[in-house]
Length: 240
Length: 322
Image (cartoon, rainbow over all chains, first blue to last red; front, side, top):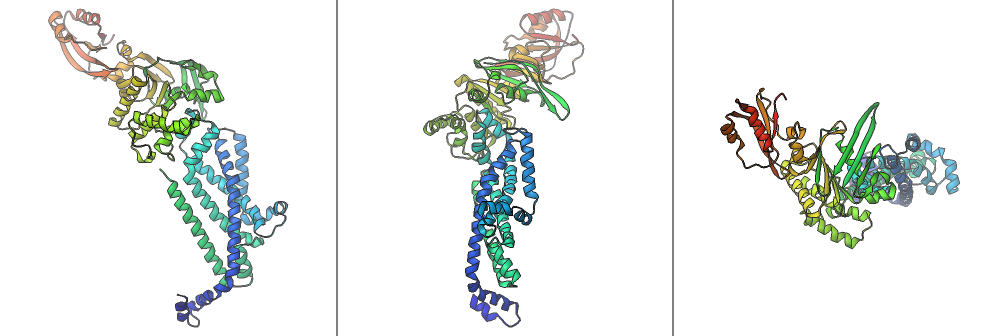
């Protein structure tokens, strides 16, 4: 395949560019592989924190609503406002805005570990809203039936609402992961590491198109894999 | 078995105040099937939900068995609810669980061990005729089958009382018939007390021993179905036997509140020399009895005597314009 492309390549041809790119790939691979690992590392931990904080937050948003499990309009209004603030900040601004918090938590503002802080803060409200939406779609009749069977509210969340909303929750999680991958590339702009960092430093600042293309390809592949795995899981969990 | 006194409940809908319950007294005897019928918005759903306190009435008390539910809260209320089964119009099954998982849910919540749960779920599914569906998911079942699962689940913790919230309203006539037959069989076999709400007169006719007609948050009439039918001016009788509205001043509505063998009409014409012309009517099976209602035009000199004769034999006579 590679030979064929090289053979076909003529001077000034579009194929020449492709051939150069393919030839250059082995040279780029060590730093690309490192960038890929960094991206996966950042996205993984940011996803963990998003679920850890976003899931309870989403549950609270639904539970404190009127007609919910523990109606508390004031609490809900406050939570909702916090989530909205988090959602309305462009990620690149949020990243800069939380720099001092990042330094406090991680000790530095550079590198993939430091990037996990703004990534998590950006994704928690995003995932929380998606959780809220999925939970709202759970049949109220089922929740009422659980009450009628003498179920504790905590058990209703754990055994009725979350399992019933599971396909939607997984779909929301996938959407969060995909968003995090794109956020993580932005983190490169302030030295966060990963594929985005590579694209900006090598591709943009040093005019190396090959790095730009390579990072684009790798990001597309990662997103595709995440989306396909998620879709598979959703399909297996759907019983409707 | 169910004793509710002086129930009031008001909602605020936008700026309007809605009296969902406006002084309802409900008394359901042990082992009977009691139907509350009414249009949507009459308050029957609120009434049903007041019995297991899914909605707490503003005033009034609810007793089920020897427990006064209105005085309970928290864990004790939840424990009391486990002895009241509930069946829902749209089944309210967990789509993420199998049939067995759904039926076992109340047991799981009550902390029954896995092995005892499995045994009980098996028994319950046999009871409702779904022994072979344990591993199916609700989405794979028909409406009637889903409601059988709902009934099995409601019976899981061995309740003495079953509440039915329009259990057959989402089902076709044949399936409705089979679910009603199942409810009646369960009452007979398990000695259940069933309180149901419905907007279908047919349900009252087919399985109810007692009934109440509800409108605007109160009972218009209530009591044993056969007694109600034998009461002059009964709304229930009128709803169960729609008669043509073509009677002149001489017309009479005659209700047979139980089965009679005597050939009254031919006897009337012979003994009292009246002319009887049947305008409309019907015979229905109500509460296991054959009950009829006729609208007739009756003329003749001894008309009054004839009508008295009918009344004396236990028939209900209602003359037009009286």
